[in-house]
Amino acid sequence: MRWSEQAVEVDDGALPGLSRSGLVRSVRTPDFEGVTFHEVLAKSALNRVPEAAHLPFQFTVNTFRGCTHACRYCFARPTHEYLDLDAGKDFDSQVVVKLNVAAVLRKELKRRSWTRETVALGTNTDPYQRAEGRYKLMPGVIAALAESRTPFSILTKGTLIRRDLPLLRQAAGQVPVSVGISLAIIDPDLQKKIEPGTPSPQARLTLIRDLADAGLAPHVMVAPVIPYLTDAKSHLDELLGALADAGASGVTAFPMHLRSSTKPWFLEWLAEEHPALIRRYRGLYGRGAYVTPEYSSWLRERMQPLVQRHGLAGSGGLRQSGSEAVSSDSVAVPELQHALTLF
Image (tube, rainbow, N blue to C red; front, top):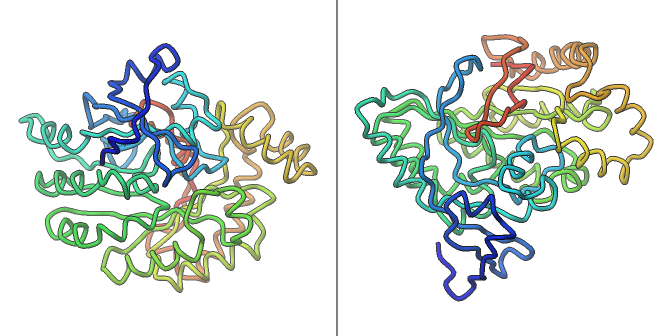
């Protein structure tokens, strides 16, 4: 999607990281007040995940960098610093769009060396954030993967994925397709404060039902669980019950991680909204990015009976993964590290 009447001049001196990323131009539109889209021509689409990650996929594709979901806890925020942008407001409002990602991906999938490994979408920033409605990158990506007989997975908070249900059903008839929805907060008021740019909990529950009705067996990331805000038994019980009623096939849960520059960004919000929790967070996280082992064990013990009660454990039961994932922009993805996985 091009907005030829709304282009703005780019100061390469102000955005050296973007100029190195194949910047074509920067665009603003009234439909996205306060947001600038930096359109780039990507040199590659497929990104290899290190074998040490021990993940069920070896490659990822990201259509965007930055995300208007504006989740305060987002693990991908530090990736913006590679572009000489900050991990706070810039991450929410300076979105990099890979205009040619589908065309580049199609070429890479035609290489003789490609052996159809599983490709994961949504491991860094959400491929169905609102901008996808403008740029329409995902249909080309899905088509390229399906035509090359490449299995793939999608993780999103965005209800825009509903637009592509016909494509996903068609692709699922050709290759294994896995669809995951992220929903960790059932309280709409709290969700709006922490994830201000995301669809409401009810909108995502409706989406889960639509995916289930389409035969896509949606898995749900109940993640991250935010200590002292979303870890109450009543909250988790209500959430899991709603997910089961909506048709979720299983859930994955893990406590919030606060790595690198994501930590001060989240704690700034916490100090404003819940100052009484700051001392408890210092004790829980210390100077690190992860909660204490005691908290992880406590959360696992709290989750286990609730998951069983609502029939969301599947056949795999509850296990903790110690592997560390790496995103498609070579930045660690703690979302899959120390996960409480229920298949």
